[in-house]
Length: 82
Image 1 (cartoon, rainbow, N blue to C red):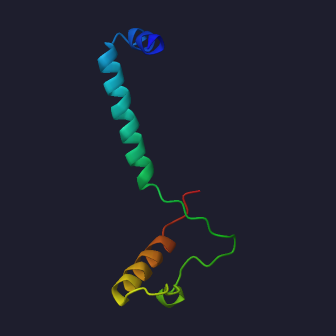
Image 2 (image 1 turned 180 degrees about the vertical axis):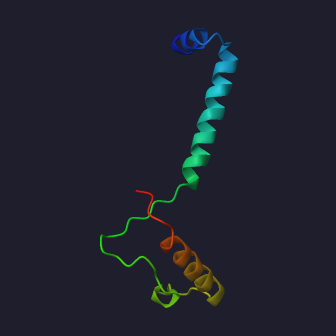
């Protein structure tokens, strides 16, 4: 509690405002982190994938398989950010 009060005072905030702001920032960071998708591909991997190359999962419905094929093709075509 003393540490939190010291942090709040250092920022000229009330303890309540400091805690509220910290929680809001933490929740926003978690939401942002949940949006990040990292896909690692071995060097030399083809830059494109054909929908037929996506292996169908056991018990996967036609609609789910088609949606996953589409998603994988889109992910595979994203430019390298690195």
